Amino acid sequence: MSDPVPASAGDPPAEVEEAPVEALPVETPSAAKIDPEAPWHRLSWRMLLVDPLGSLTRLIPLFLVSLWLGSNRSSYWFELTIISIVVLAGFLRWISTSYQIGRTHIVLRTGFFNRKVITVNRRRIRSVDTESDLFHRVMRVSIVEVGTGQADAGKSGAERFRLNAIDTREVEPLRDELLAHLKALDPSLRDADEEQWGSRFGEDIARWRITWARFAPFSFIGFGVLFSLWLLTWQMGDMHDRIMHLRLVTSTRSWLDSLGQPWTFAGEVVAVWLVAGVLAVITYAIRYGKYALTERGNVLYVQNGILRRKHQALDKARLRGVEIRLPVYLRLFGGGRLEPIMTGTKKGATASTLLPQAPLKDVRRVAVRILGDETPVTVRLRRHPWKAARRRITRGLLPFWIVATLFVLIRIDSGPAGDVWVRWGIPAALVFFLALSVDRIRMLGHALLPGLLVTRHGSWTAKRTVLEADGIIGWTVRQSVFQRTARVASVTAATPAGARGYSVMDMAADEAWALAEALTPGITDVWHTEAAPDRHVSPAMGVRRESRGEGGHPQRDEAAKDEQAEAP
View (spheres, rainbow, N blue to C red):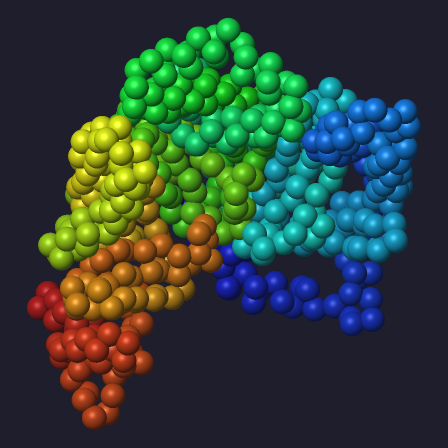
């Protein structure tokens, strides 16, 4: 993992360094950033076709509902009005959008009625991402978005420096020009390589294999697609009835009904999962097909997608660690996924993903390659107190009592015919939730390495987090009523990167602040009191920790003693 550099947009020193540059007259805050010698550019004229087509595609459900409700009418003024408004809005966006690539800043002017000017200092650019859906690829244009780091995560779409659409032939030269300043961060890059600087040049870390699609059914992607299709066909009643009366569907339902409860219910669940699994494989291949992770110097390039192609350039200077996702439904089949912990990363469907669902050996290999050390990925974690394990069982069995109550209600409502639910359903649910609880106990743990925090917890959504100590800006220790009784606590490391906070769950309470002190020396200085100079007192935890030496810092005092012992 590369060391942080002062130019990183997520680091406070960069803000201090940039302040004199950004100090501009109040009267004309953006005029001073405009380069009078640099030309202004417009988006490609093909935007006049791509933008309305994309907007109308998203409005297809509205049109379907409108046509279904008014199937007997002869006038379609509503649909024509919507189409006219969308086309006019696309034209106004095209004529009101222009951008400039200046020597010190890039400037974007948008808005016809509400004028906006977005400026970005070129030295603060940390990523240039591109994407293109089916319409963009047909029209040979792409979307280019410039990222500067942490501040991008909270911006709306209107506040981002986003160019939709740029001629595809101009994307690579534009990306290379905007990221040229990162060449200084890579001493190994020769001047002869400057022409190839960008995503065209680098070393492959991982590439998508079609065999990875076997992990797609063990996710929730397919169920989301299936639910969306069900809603669409349900709104179109005729289509829904036709599907339900297909010979394959009716014969399958009749066979399942002949099995009797609860086997009919179990068979229906398996049938739905099979259909969702097929949809998940198709969706996974479309979303992550042609995936590639490439490294060049201080930049990671990620590309994926078949219909909607996405290219992301991630500055390793913003990297604060990695998160290995190990949900139990993937782990059982030897799979996982890898997410970056970076400043400025997005959330949800647009989040940066280093490696999608893939074999666990590939996930660990890529994690080791990015971190530069295999110890954080393979180190044996420290177990938590037995009371933490007890909490995993008591909390893990809470859903079981809900399910058991539901089976009992079914028995009461159905009479003797519902005995099978109590006889088979309750024991099966007990075994299932106990197995999850045991897996949560097995996954719980943490480790302290030089400059790194490694933590792991969960089962259904298990994850192993490797976080740099330099990226931690604060600590939070929480205790519920039940945690205080068990003398355990949850410690959260706050960071401007990734999820903004990463927790060590249910560790021993008397070691909570010692962990924070070990990774952030001096964090507990505020508890040193004149009345008790030899103690550190936590007002939140009531934990008293004896000091070793006059300085009041056990770790630093021990280091000082070691240095004195080694001195001649």
